[in-house]
Image 1 (cartoon, one colour):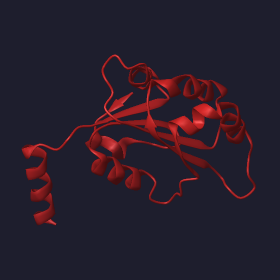
Image 2: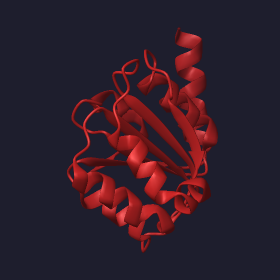
Image 3: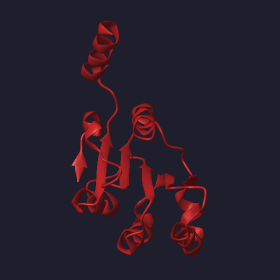
Image 4: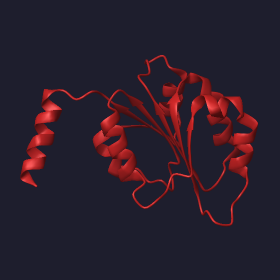
Length: 146
């Protein structure tokens, strides 16, 4: 499911537990991440390569429940199409109490990861494009109004 970066208030983390951020605007990505997870703490902050190297251990750690954590929030950095197989396996297992946010750089339209997140109803895909004059003027206008 595709959502615009200004529509993130529509995201319900109880229903949509898999989110893909892609694009070059890292500042806006961090801002949205903080807004989405304002009352929550990130359990794991990993790079894609760490997960690929230890895929079985990663999936097993998701399956185990902790007495101290109600939900696991995993933030995956520097993601590419290589992680798609692992993510689709996690989605198929229907693991409760996890939220996975994937941060990727620029992804082409042909990207398998991007098209998977755009088409799957359980997933959300958000594009973060670089700021232009129009978006910067809108941000400045909002700032001065407040």
